[in-house]
Structure formats: structure tokens, C-alpha cells
Length: 589
Image 1 (tube, one colour):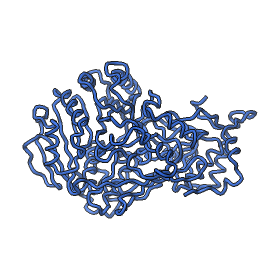
Image 2 (cartoon, helix red, strand yellow; image 1 turned 30 degrees about the vertical axis):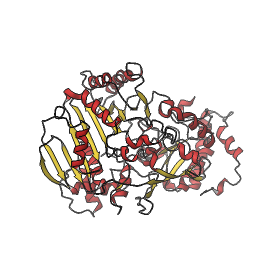
Image 3 (cartoon, helix red, strand yellow; image 1 turned 45 degrees about the horizontal axis):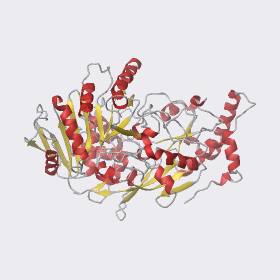
Image 4 (tube, helix red, strand yellow; image 1 turned 60 degrees about the vertical axis):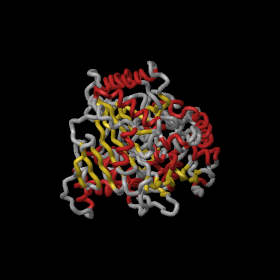
């Protein structure tokens, strides 16, 4: 479907090109800036509702509209448009381009580089473009608005009548689905279903000229290819059609928490890696963290707890010599606790996939300063959940039901990454998230030495975060079937995070410590062990080939076709040669 704005009328392509690249020669820079801003304000005022536009003069509303979830820098866009429809997106995009502004798109605002909200740009925020998705039981698909989040997608399958309905979500509930797809998208069940980008069947995209098009395997197929893992910068996605999967066992979903002795961290790292390389069971996914206290694995298994234990035993991941024994084993089946003496691990089996992911959310939020008190506050505000005096605990059904109720509400603090309840961090590692297939034993020893180093700066989280397993179904596609190329990886990892407590001096110390850590992979003995970077954990030091590898050239060609004027151009987005804009950002000279 094509939606052409009637007001383009007599504007020919030549005039649009001219308006974008001309420079106000005779006017002073200050006068030209005022004139351009006046033109933008007039256009926005003529074509969008007043409350849709948030200007720098709007005080606290502007401060709220320019916040970032995972970066602490202040941002100063020319305008933030809170779009409610694809028509709003088209109108805002045309107003920006005709006034000579570049455009940035924001949704969940989780970019580690803060690239969703760019200084001097017109920011089009799509977070209001979201309704709770409904699973089509006949086609096993669901349509998802571009402003939806991981949590809302989870709520969609939770409400489905399809037994064992699955949709891949990332580790953070408030991450926006569009950015998630554009970077590839990994999660707890990636070994079973692949990347989120692999599960997109179709997209609606507004192009730089204001036209909305369908992109799928048969229509605008090059745009569809590039928008699955290619980082964006070609248009503004307004809706996605997603596959919904059925679990291999629709009634059993298990979470394992396994802690290992720090004295065996190298052996556990090698064992985890071997398990992933051998694809021992695609039903097992999850994440793990290595700190000075040893490994902690947080695993999601699509099956019964007994089957999951057998899989872990076969993979050597329940070797009694490796396991910490300072805590007793726990077994919870459908919220009923039993003693578990065979291994000192915590096991939770649930009846629904949404419950196991809600449990993952709960464990994340339980250690935040505010704890789980927000659940009760949401319960009181919603007035329809009942039992608001319940004491939140990740082991109770009430708590997980409340997480899922919050997940279904786009304006709940679970879905708003900039809310006070969310955990705000910033990645200071310049290399971002790294993808690897196999690390040598010496490299694992290096990693152990770093996480246990006495030289780690204060308020600098330099733990080894094995964020997601990247094996199994992720490798079923060839490197060039989507824009995401690293199909032979087994693991995604990252490190060096700071939070609100970190001072400027501590941040700089963390940056320097991180450089010593990562130089081992790029200039030291582990050179060649890293396949490439994960665009959703974007760093600042590597060029685009680090993220897109052999697919970069094709991405550049597609960029030239769809956005030759570089309206969506910004650092670390695939670009064509620079074009001069009447309103230039500060770093463009």
C-alpha cells in the first residue's frame, strides 16, 4: 500500500533535493538558523496536532522527551515529534527534510551510544504507536506496532489461546521492538527460534519522501533484507508482522540458576563454549555472568525440569566439582516448593512461556534500589488486579502475573526504559558487544584474570557478561540471507558498564580499564577470535565493517537507493557520501 501526502502536490523531486542541499550563502549563520527553525515550526504547526510536537522551549516536557535509557549524556534535538500514526511520521519527516533537518528515530531509547536522540536533529518518537498485539491462530503470526517493546510482545503471546505460543524477546523488557530487529535481536530462546530479525515476515516503512511501503520477501525485498539486522537509516518502520512459534512442549518451561566455584572459572567457560559449539540441545538458552565470585548461569529450557537436568548433565554443566555448595538446592514446580538435594541449584518450572520470562524480569528488578515495590504501586493504580497487599516475591504467581499485567500496559514503568524504576547503565567499552565462536583456554584465563583483578575501578562493572547464547537456529541461515552476517557465532558477550553512582573520574578510569581488557582481543594473543560486533550493543571505536562484515557493501548500495540525501545519516549508521544540510549538526563541520 502506498500513502502519498497530497500536500507534496507541486513539489517535484528536484525542489526537494535543492531544499536539502542548498546553503544559505549570503545570510549569517545565526539568521539562517532562525529562518530554518521558523520554517520547521510553521510546517509542523500546519500538519500536526500541537501536543505532538515537543520543542526546546517546552521545559520539563522537552527534558522528559529527550531522555535516554542507557546513556547519561544530555541531548538537544531541534524537535521531538511524538508520532501516533504513520501519517504523523510522514508529515514530520517531510517537514524536517523540507526545512533542511536530518531525522533520527526513537522508540525504546536503549542505544548505548544514545543514537536515537541526536543533537540538532528532528527526532520522530514512535513509542505511542503500539497496541497490544494479538496472535492470529490460523497463521501463527502477530502484527506489532513499531513503538512496542519486548514486554508487550511477551504479553501478546501470554494472552494467546495457542498452547505454548512463543515469541523471542531480549533480556530487557523496555527495549523497543524496531531497534531490536534492526540490530538482529538475540534472546533467551534464540537457539530454538533464531534472531528476532529472522522472525519478521513483513514491514511497513515510511521512506524519506513520505511514502509508506510494504517490505517483505516479494515487495521491496532489498529494503526488507537490509532492515533485518542492517542497523536502519533507510526509512521509519511503522509496523511489523512477526512469526509466532509453538514450544516443543506446550506445558513445561524451566528456569535454572546455576552457580559455580571461582576456582573452576576457566573450566566452566570452556564447558559452556563446548556445549554451545556442539549444539547439544536447542531447547536450552539463556545467559551467564562471570565475576570474581565465579560463574552464574541463568538458563531457560523449553521442557520439563527433569529433561533440562539431563541436558545439563550430558553437557558437563552440572559437574559436582564445579558447583558451589554454599546454598541448598531448590525445586519449584508451578509455584510449589520442594527440597532438591541432587544439585545445589535453583530450579523453577512453569506452565507458560510468559511465566518463565516474567521470572527472568523479576530477578532483574528484584535487586534494583526500588526492589519490587513498583508492582504494588501498579496494582493500586490499575485498580483491577486485586490482592494489592501481597508481598512481591519472584516465587509467587501473583508477582509474575503482575509483571505480565505491567507488560501489557505500554505506559507502565516496565515498558518505559527512562522510568525511575528501570536500571540505567551506560556501556563505556568502546568495542560494544562482541560475537565469537570459540575462545582459547588462554583467552578464558585472561577473562578470569580481568574479572578478578584488584585494579578494577570503583563503580565500574567489568564482569564478563555472556549476554546471549548465539548457537542453534541462529546459524541455520547463510550469512547473506539477512543483513546480520555472524551466523557461525556461539556467544555474545560484553563488559564495562557504569551506572548513576559513577563519577566522571571513575568513568574515565573504567574506560581505561576496559581498553586494557579489550586490547587482548584486537591487538593481543586473542586477535582473530572475535568474529564481529553486535549492532544492538553498539560501541564507538570500530567501523561499520566490524558490524556488517561482508554485507556492508550491499547495505551501502541499498542506502544509496533509498536515502541518497542521507536524511537518516548519523555516526555508525550506514551512510552514502556526506550531503550538506541547511541545518548542520555540530560535529559535521
